[in-house]
Length: 248
Length: 320
Image 1 (tube, chains in turn yellow, blue):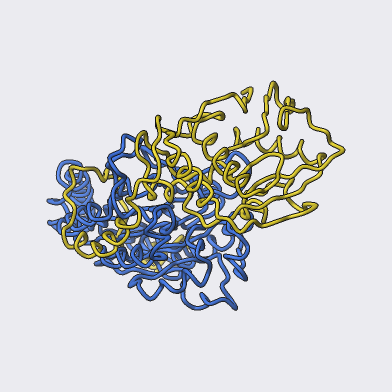
Image 2: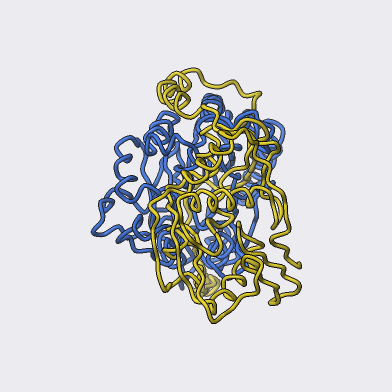
């Protein structure tokens, strides 16, 4: 009995942890391998896709034009955006489309830079891989402000026929074909079906007064312009002309 | 007491061997793995490959000569030869960017991914560029699943043809992988995404990550995300996903074509680490993540329990 008294009984609250043999993460090493020329290509893979490549090369490697300089989008007012917008505008004018200015793509829609020298059809496809078509949108002059705000907020966009000098946040000098914007008239904008259908959320393009799809692919418009230049022996050589400047 | 001492000695030895193993990882991970203490898992990943099957041409441009699926195949083959447990994943935008897509509709991209042995991919916005039908048409060429948890494909041709997640068994490891897609409205032409319903990725991710971690007892949960790394506005991104969820260990990102020099480590809503990694675009880089797991005891769940014990019992009882 005494012995029993000596035994201490405790009522304790124990956090009993159910344990199991498990694999515990001890270390994580994250790296990346540059897939560069020093890596030997896998011959079986090359062989597998050779028929696709050969057929593609035979269609895509033809030279369609020549550029005096390399084009890249590296600033708001860049030669690649200028080339893109001017080319689409010129080809649509050639097809008798009537519009005030062109905003044929956002910067995000320009998918590759363009090299100096010969341009192949492949280059045109990689610049503009999408199947988007040219669209004419008639919008109220009152919407130009909102459109300009969007363009400035995105750090510039490919434009032709409109100049934007942003001098301070929310203040810009805008001219369409050299004239100050008359908000009482309407304007016809050459753009893409993607942007006209709400792509990239351009509010100024929603509920337009009129919308006409030219059923003319933007890529074809660029290609036609490049080929027309080649035909008259001219090289592509866009000038950075200050059509857009953004005060940071 | 003797029992206790031997216990202590054992745990001391265990600690030593664990540290030694970790040291060994630094010096020679293969040796440590070979001795069986360490289980290694290698995750290889790409994002936004955008139909870049050939390397960029040598034309003086920024990415001249980089990438190429045949070189990627060589690297993957080498790593598979060296490592026992490898998972190869892609975070979407497989399609669009070179004439391979315009001419063959994505067939070659999917066939090559199957040949390279991709284990899973999620969908990016450009994977809808030939419409839902255009994507569905190429699914028959895939020998890997498309994982996407926050698109409701009900009533479309993709209904039942993707899955929200997959659990991979690699050796003793269970790895849960799920996919998240970006909001389609304003990004993909409505005619191309049709009746697909986009669901808020945060609650979906919380539900699935916890299902994978708790119910399925996955050792690792990976999210293939096409949400994008980060935005100036409050649009949901990988950073937001990491912060507002729990249960995800790794987010393999895409969409923003972000070249990250190092993974971003963030804290989830329970204060646990989440890693975000993205490797640019066009297959210029192959991401590689090596996980080292050690066999041991792990807290699974804590149960509050009242019980009567004596001193001897409490000495013997190990609380881990």
